[in-house]
Length: 422
Image (cartoon, rainbow, N blue to C red):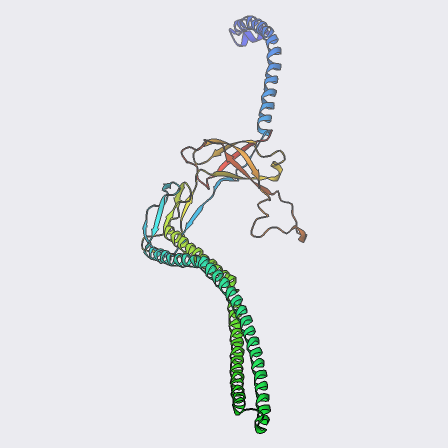
């Protein structure tokens, strides 16, 4: 077979020999190399498999220990600044996207009307304070006067009682004098009658009869005088009783003195209430005047400025919004299947799309219900048309302190938070 090949293709024999000669040494060298590599392969292959297994386990542990979502954004409060009084805006001091500090003057309303109202309220307060001072002074004066009047009335009643007693005694004395005069007159009249008979018989002298007549006339005059004195004494009793009644009436009037004091005290209280009311009006006028200065309630960025100088504004009308950038957070809507191990305090990495940077934070709280519960038309699962849908629960994530010193983050920015749950 070799000879035949050699005949048809000259030189092939030598080539075959050369090939056989070359293949022989090469095959031996490869076999020797393979024999040297086999022990290394036996060691490296298990090591590589072990390293791959460790790497796969590490990757699984790394990714399995994090929960992430792309349904998240930065949130924050928006402080809407509105007018508290009505008036024309005289000047606006800020513009949109301007950073302001709390207390910065944003706009001013014409204060002239409120300054006039404040002056009027102060004048009313001064008048009420003067009235209150006068009513307070009247209290001790009324108390002293009523006390004096009561004491004087009581003394007058005592004097009137004494006067009645004296008049009654005088009346009694006058009645006794009248009785004595009447007795004397009766005796004198008897003497006259007796002497008349004796004179007629000439048993006594006419002179004795004349003396008896004079004595009778004197006794009659004494009776008239005693009757007049008795009438006078009676009238004095009546006058004394009238004075007593007057003194008693004055005493009754004086006894109303404490009521007069209470009336004055009530007037003082009423005037004090008026002073308090006027003071409240002054305070309100001062507040209204102060409200003409519209200031920033917090540190933040001005947004949605809708007021211009010369515009008339009313109480409650929204003028400017201030967004506080120091108080922002992330609202992440995680699926309910991702919340098994989530709890407040867990560390979070927050990737912000706008800057391509990752910030750190922590879970602050979980919402009280899923987003669907607070939607305009919440689902009604009791109707029977229920298809189970994985719900999302808003989770609030707070940035760690010092993460945004330059206030680059803004509410509404899209973020991707990753929560370390294991």
